Amino acid sequence: MVSEQLIAEARAAHPDIDLPAEEFDKAMAAADGDAPAADIWLARAALLGVPGAVDRLEEQCISGLRSTLARFEVGSASLDDALQTTRQKLLVGPDGGPGKLAQYTGKGSLRGFVRIIAAREVVALARRADARTRRSEPDLEELVNDSDPELLSLKARYGEEFKAAFEMAIAQLEPRQRNLLRHQLIDDLGIDAIGALYGVHRATAARWLARAREDLFDGTVTELSQRLSLPAPEIQSVIRIIGSQLDASVTRLLGSQDG
Image (cartoon, rainbow, N blue to C red; front, side, top):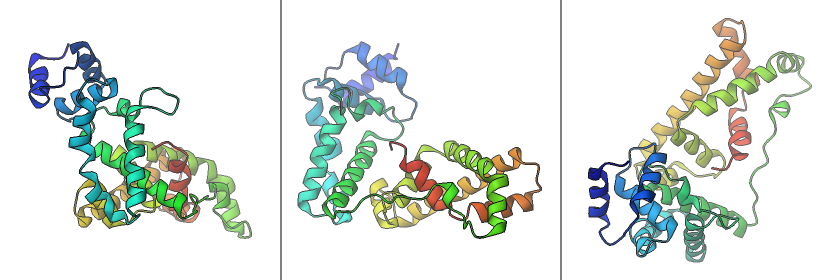
């Protein structure tokens, strides 16, 4: 049962949105972030179609996105289309089920959650308009030169271990770190666009991204060290050679997942 204090806080923020207490209980039970209770309240209410909730969602989370997304330079028509698609996806799933708002569990603000969904729609629509398709990156099996005996030997000996260690390291990253890598390597966003997406200075975005890469590399080294009985310097050599196309590996793995 949600505390009366949290209910009071949510009602104070949205006094005209009458979300049933049992629905707020369900939403808070699924929450695993630190967002305000008012954000959880609004997301649940909009998803359920509570009177006034969708208008409030538009006012607080969508109407102010144009200036942020304009940095992607896709044109006003594509921007309008992306925002409309965002509205639809937030409320209704592709099969008529719950929309993406059902995935909001309070990790970050509701406004930030909506902003990321909208940015992905802008990128997707811009690509379709330019008749471009998402890059098809090679599998790890194709990342080494088969004419090089040393690389062939390393692939045969350590390829599967590297794949398993790398996938474990990706899974251990924070959600924001995985999204940062996805934005850069799959969505083709630059540092300025990523900073705009998260509402931070480009220097902060660059620092976050560098840390994500460092954590991914260190995590892969740690996992591979546990799987192979090799000294640390040799582990580093294996990763430098087999994992020289680390970006392609990230693209392959994250590109196959629904962000």
